[in-house]
Length: 494
Image 1: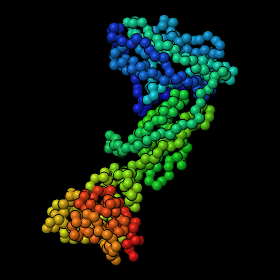
Image 2: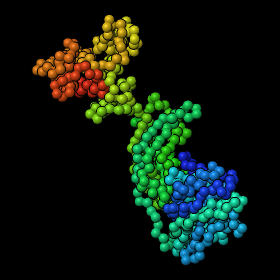
Image 3: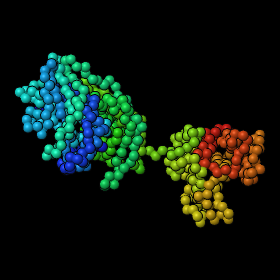
Image 4: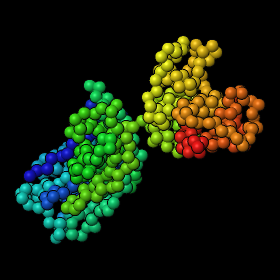
């Protein structure tokens, strides 16, 4: 049975030879580099696959041809011999002696092949390509024979405008009795996997996955085809790999090496629907090399990524562990999720956070004040905070100034009010707590709340005895202080 050339796809470059003609004087090419990294492998009983890397300069020639820079065609020629026999030298189609039935399999238009991101290409030879008298039932005898291959490029003119230019030959590679077979024993995993939600032309979501390919995998791909597989799960469900074997996972188009993949779980019959607002989708990627006649070599999986919005886009190193813990507990609001936590927190943002904290601690649903309205803010969470006596308006009370930044002393007062709303029995015990060195900078209402927070290690100020009350409170500070208020409750609730 004849083997057909596999269509390479996805992000691999499809390069077609151009037949546009320019003058010979416009062709600046002086020489061609030889093919690199030849490798051979047995593919079934009657097929030998030949794989090689095209130098960047050769890819540039193809690009120039495609852009009508050259009036010619870039092709490859493959020579072969069996054991100690003579080389069967390939000839181009422009040669008067060219016979397609005899020479056609060893001559190929490079521009008609797809090339992966490493400029790797391959072709194949069934046994009757080498020996026309053989039939499809015949096989290569690699136990008793050795087959040698070499190749080179040729840049052919159209209409004889210039002399054909040949590259040097590649190194000679062998397969069979006297050949050392190239092998791959392991693969490194994909690195730095990232996932992005995209929309198709029908506004339906799909997932764009990108990752880095280790150099060791790029090198392995020069010897044997290496490609990726994608594992997938929804929420707390099972990974797809737990119910199917590796070859049942979404796979690289045409099974060639790439660093990106567009996964549409619906089109690939993995799920009936994708609802980003309701579910979290998880992904991981591995590399596979399928050795002929042996078990596949599968790398470890990459890092796991998901569609879950991260708790923060930026945070100070000291704050990150507490922010992660606060996220797990459920303190971080939707408004703050994914934001830069080093930025100052606004009055509105803190009011929302305080209400979320209250509802988490008490298990009660906060209710907005039935009559209160602010002229500059209609956020229902702010009205809930007002109803809980956590916050109040500014000036005459008709405005809230939702976008104003919260000072550290204001934050202390609002956190203690939040705790009072949560725990009716709470007493703001500050006995034994010394004054702050900068206590004269406080507003009177905030001194005791700040001392309470310092006594129970909810905040320690600057560590030198100062509270710095008139500095803006950052988002990460506010969330960390709420978290500590929650975790240290057994100390102040006596």
